[in-house]
Structures are given as C-alpha cells and as structure tokens.
Length: 280
Image 1 (tube, one colour):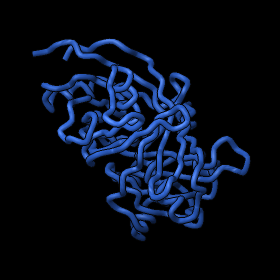
Image 2 (image 1 turned 30 degrees about the vertical axis):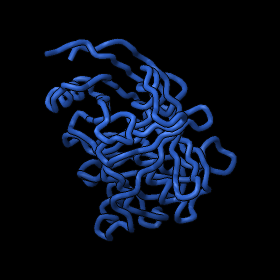
Image 3 (image 1 turned 90 degrees about the vertical axis):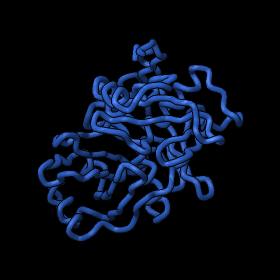
C-alpha cells in the first residue's frame, strides 16, 4: 500500500545548486518492490534515483539500491555520496563515528568526512588492462580523433562497465563531438590534462547509451574513481588532485581525489535542492 516517504533531491559534486549531478533519494524504502522502484526512477528521469533500506550486512549502516531509467546498477559514485548525505541529513547515525559503511550491489563501500565534504573509498575494478585493438579503433573513430591523440587507454570497470582513453589535453576532451552510431553500447570515459596552474588537474567526460541514445553524464563518481586508480597507479597523476567534469553540459563539477596508502578516496560537495515527501 502506498504511503508518504521522505524524499531528497540533491546536487552532487557541486557546492552550488544546478552545477553538479542531480540525484533523487527515497528514504525508508522498505516494502517497495523492484517494479515500483524502476517505475519511479523512470518517472524522475534523472541519471540515478536511489532507495534507502535497512542493511542486510551486519557491518553496514544502511543499504542503497541504485536505479537509472533503464535499470539497476551495482554501484555508482554520485549516488553513493548523495545517498550518504541524505541518510545523515535524515538523522542517520553511523556505527563508527566519522565513518559510514554503505551496502550496495558491489558489497560494502566506506565513506568518510574529508575536508568538510564526504568521500568514498573507490571499490576495486572488476576489469582492467588495455583496450583490445579492435575496440580502440572503434573508440578513435567514434570520437573523431587520430590514433596518435590517444596517449593511454584502459578498461576501468568498477561495476557500470567503463573503459577510458586519455587524450592529449583537456581542451581536446572538451572539443570532442562523439558519433553515437560508432560508439554503440560502449560506456566510455575521456580524460585530458589541464595546463599547469589551472583550477583542475584533469577534465573528464562520461558517455554511455540509454535506449539507443548517447547520453553524457554531468559528473561521474564511479568513472572518476576507477580513472584515479588507473592514473595514480600508472604514475600519470599525482596522489591528490581535483578533476573537473560537466562543462560541455553547462555544469561545473569538482571531484576531489586523494590516495591514502592503497585506498583512493573520491570526494565531493553535496547540496540539497528539494526536500519533502513522495507517496509510493
């Protein structure tokens, strides 16, 4: 039976409303079936909608299910930060002060307060290594760049299925106009370095298909997480940096990366835009 449930709509990876990546969060989602969650995610029509549930894992503080309009994801970055922010704002108390443990499709994900903002520990990648030659040719054709413009490439799949290429510069990344037909079903990240002294060390873009249409995500935590693991591990980036994302879409996302020992932390600001209840 439908009833009112607390609801947040947040902007993630931005301290300024409307400049980050929006997220819808439904609290107290126990009792909702898969079909209702999927239908509500389609109705919000945001890149992700999350549902907060009691944890099934005794070591977790809460469980989250993450839906896009097309289906459920085992993990995604901006829903992780946004869901944690909403859970804390609604009075959630972590078992261990200063650390929140989220349960999701990839298992437990740890979050912490870092510099006044939340950060999550990047989960391990499910697939890594160089892109296959045929796939790389397809990516190059789909981006309309020369093969020599791709400085590095890698599978960076931590759940959603990402692969990534590093182009010659942030400016080249921003200038790309992708060919959806050539890229097909790829979930592709682009990364390029800014010049020294810029506000961000790198610029990222995230491209993926939804219903046959190529979509660009405003700011992507999962991609930034696995790209950071790749770049830092390969000596292509410092152990702490800021990445920008979303400029092509008129956004101004900021992702704060820091490696501590073996863990890469992915941080960002979260700001509430809508708060109330939804009847589901």
